[in-house]
Image 1: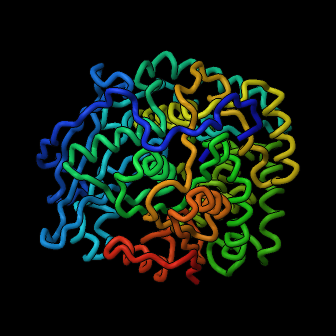
Image 2: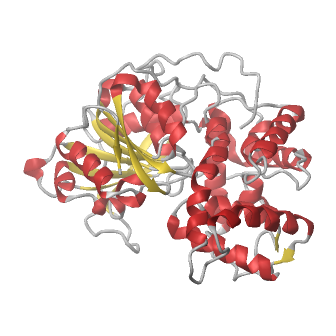
Image 3: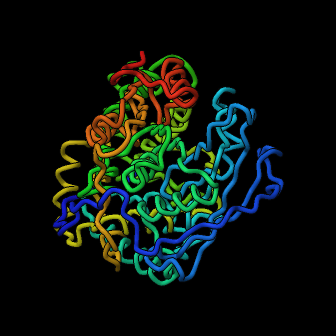
Length: 487
């Protein structure tokens, strides 16, 4: 997800619950048709396009298209309404989720709801945005920047200026329109176009913040809301707090990886769990000094930053632990593994543009080099595994636009209809952030903590207890009486 210190003037002012621009737009009914054939798309899935204002403050102005999908309730007699699948990101899409993870839902949930997916504004095949970045600037070590081996952030700030200029030049009015509050308002137009008085939702990762903001702006338009792998809703920092929490997320998950990586087998990296962390730090430091050429990769060498980024990605799930272990073992031998496959450049340009547009428009970021350098230096001292990255400068450090409105403050005002589910060990959205969201929602929510590891809990990396608790809530409305722990 997405930290440092800043002077934030007025950004903690709450947005009034239910607020919407004067003259808010209405939505015409959707014209459903079969989706274009594609791998993995259920033949029952239908597609449509929703036209929404480019600027919700100008409802009669230019419009952009949102790609929307649905699979109808499998038992119309049991249908309760719609379940909107809110994607992570920013930059993610749930357009094909009714055919994908939606089909992992138990039958009683699929009977109760039409499953609704969508590509948020800016995300292809909705009206798409791009920053036109060069391939080298699409690397996650640039877009989610790591300090230089000596801790300097000068190169990161230069990259921030380059990326921000490109986004302002190529992104135009569309990138300026991106924000979480805008996505929430788009969602309410989708609700209206679906002909629903209220919507249920399952938001994952960044989708938990979108769902929380929607519930704050439109509290009485919500039915049953599941927020899974939860973001810290800090109204002063927003995405800066998400990035900063990687420090804790890595500390929470790395011991689990170390225990796995010390077991006998093809991916073993050390004889005991206690040896894995110092080994990783030694390897990263050696690769900082002596990178290994990696032809065909981007960047084209295995250095300490690439190893650290692989660690961050590899800790997202026990299923990806082998990728990190393989790279560590290759680095010990002075070799590299095969170049990993990745998305095409155009898809990456789109995702990066949506990510930067959203996180930079949601809240003001620090503008001075000293603010980042001081924060990074302290972070490197306290959290050597993440080497200062979580407090570093994104393109937002040079973003040419100020936020159009303050971040939405999540409060306890509204119906008590939210179920949070959270793995105890999650590198991207650690448990501490879920506790912050739970505290903000107050009586509106209960928190189910799952004794499991991975990013994504419900029907993913959780356990049977957590899955059953969420399924029961979606199907019947029954929630635990209070916060609970699933062992």
